[in-house]
Image (cartoon, rainbow, N blue to C red; front, side):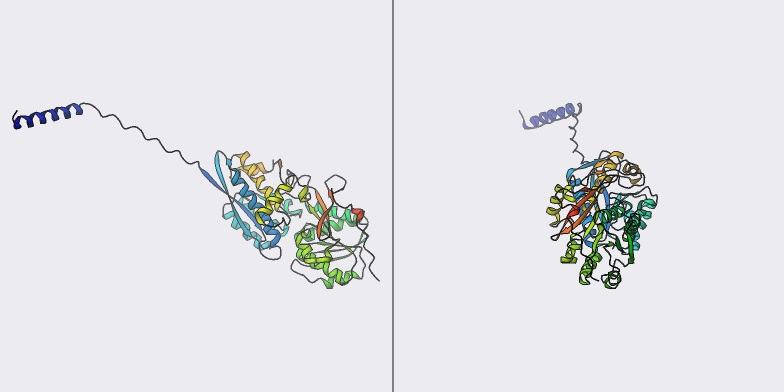
Length: 418
């Protein structure tokens, strides 16, 4: 065959093939498999407000640590609210134990769009801050504020997970008179909402039980020299000195009592029931007594596990209210889960319906936002450590704390020399 003819035949075959191909539709490409969508993650901010600087910082940091531990545990567990995975984020603020700063901090947290706030430590901070949170619609649980006025403002956003001073002050007074047989008592407070409120409640009950209040003195939460007040009290020969205030004042106060030769017993509230009190007071702390809302930490239902976890995380012991701060976060989150929303406007109503078994024990609130049936424990310093003496539950007779010395074992202090 001629080369010319072969070329034409080949071209004809190619053309026929192309025409045949053009007459058929090419098969559609196989659909690509869509990559699975990552689950939607919602960030929920939890505020923490407490003193992080100044003489009360050790207590404020303790609260913040409890909140941080709760958030880390929740994130590790994985929580869904309304079908969405949630990542919780801590927003921590320093209120410096100052009422004015507390309102500034509260507004800052509201503006940061936190869903809820754990705080403040001091009643004097919690009370003014509570209005800011109420105005912003942000629920607040104090892990430690005990002045009754905190929840008597009527704000629907206000709760606490400790017994208040309307319970703690009378409990202290009954213990002083029934167990310690105190008849003449000097009362000192630090002029704060907490200290003065606790002292007022103590004094009213002590008087009703027949004790004589031989002095009522006031200092501040900044003072550390109490010798003028104590010298005045010494001449009146009290059986007992009751102090409403925090450990930075209580420690030096009892030390100066010993230096002045005052033999009266010394008792106070939760603000001084700390390791720091013993550190500040030294040997003078031995025999001092204090009450604190709640069970002894190692006797709380979740206490032993919490104490170990806290020590492993922060390499220090719990100071005071870390378990309450921890539980407050879980109360908020359980309310969110029930409401199916992290919007405070939607889950706020669920907080009042709380029935939660926390580290500290059962948590439920009355119509004012106060903890129902909150126990109170009275401690004594023995051998450089706080040991529980008595656990008092509302509407129940005082009971000796397990593995602790009975109240009667405290030897009465000798009378002051004339």
